[in-house]
Image (cartoon, rainbow, N blue to C red; front, side, top):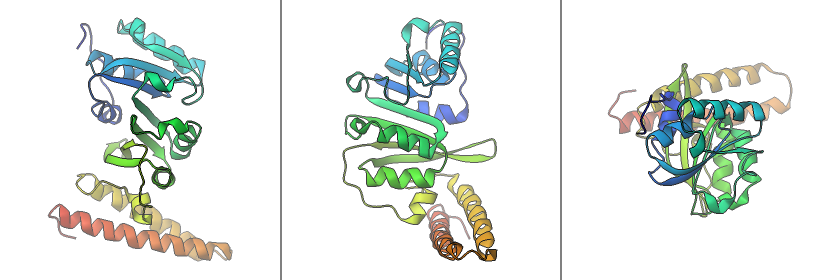
Length: 242
């Protein structure tokens, strides 16, 4: 680590940082305060980092943060939407964290060059992971691994992917409950929370008199069946009783 004070990351950002291989060339999309790039430089995890944000305010915050740690000259600050401010040839690792799943989807959709095996994508959706996961699979991004972080009493998934693959469509259970979380110690609690929320949604739909909601209720029942199955499989794999 470089000399001086060490930046302490939140558990969510630290989990992402620990998946970045030493020597990587990183684009941090939506860098906000720039904490992740600073940590990566302090710990020698990256040889190049583009700290990107679509708004000047957060980018200025990132510049000030880097100055506090004496690293402002080692970061490339980029103002632009999504990956539009990055040259594909200059990076090999893409981090998109702290955004909704639909926003992450739109960023990747606007940058089809990311669907290439040369890039590692580290994605951390705050919401709508059930929308993002199927889109990724359908568009040739393969899941390398996935893990959960519990922060502020909320479970957040972190996904590592690589493009350029032919992938099988995900089941409803995988879309909602995760693709590679069978061994994650937090998966049991995350599935319990999903089951609670989907049951609440189903109860509301069943009380509705709107005809279209009957179809939605059927989908919720199908989701619940698969999530319960995943919970049972997780319990069995982890030597726990239901």
